[in-house]
Length: 426
Image (cartoon, rainbow, N blue to C red):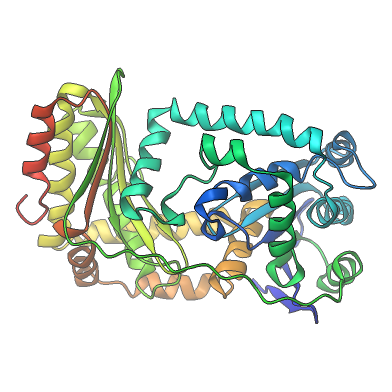
């Protein structure tokens, strides 16, 4: 796979992901604006602005924006993350210049109409309330607060009812001006396309001569010396919990080792946690691990929904499995299967034009490098049994442990959980 990346004089980057013999193409415009750039007072402004970008430009109203893409069978959407916001479309390849023009129009020229701003404020407030009513989602928000307390990285991307309610149009326009400029933007296209043609289109649409420096955020503080817990009392049918630990930044040299630990512990139905927690003991319907990587920080999590009376036992089994990874080498067959699974997921992920584009674009914008499948395979194949144990010993430590929990949480349960929050002692 040969990616092509060009930086224009104004700092705008243009990436193409050549994928021959595809009927579809995908277009994405990435902006280095997300939750990590936000002061607490305007928490959620990146997400609010993302919603507002679809509400009209000087040449298109909301309906026209959608119809230009959906009218030729395409999809149009966006998402906000901690370190970037992405606007994307997937459609037949002959229409990609149209998608690029529409996306560029909304990113660069959205007018943020006052009446639409107030209507969307109500929509976002309902979105915040919806997620708070979903324990399986809300418990992860609580984990973010535990991992990075009083920091942008630990706040919810949608903001709070208070911050969204008080946000003004002037603040949103100022935020857009500060972050939506050429040196903060990556234009990307995947499919059977020409880099030179994409470059010409992007330069004509986004070719402003204004030059600004790329935005920066304050580094996360991830120091922790003892376990932290957050018990959220709520009357629920299930108790939802997350065990979380500080892990590795996005581009850390050991990131592929962590990926293999993730596969072995909780990425699929043949993982250790699924086998021990669900299959053997019937403690949970859903049990899985997860990992997140940012520029300067990262996390490893295990989440589950369990019957309330089985909560303590579930936490105990989860911690025991993390402890096993510290104390003993994984079996050679486990590692082999994990390596094959990991590379298969990479290969499957790059078959789709949109999935491939989002993967490569995120790495180019936030990681500073483009993915290399051959290099990834080399890194994966070089991981040893001892490598995984050493990494587990580094991450799965008592002092690095956090637990968030939503459900009925009587004091007796809290005391019992406190006693077992020790991986070394498990």
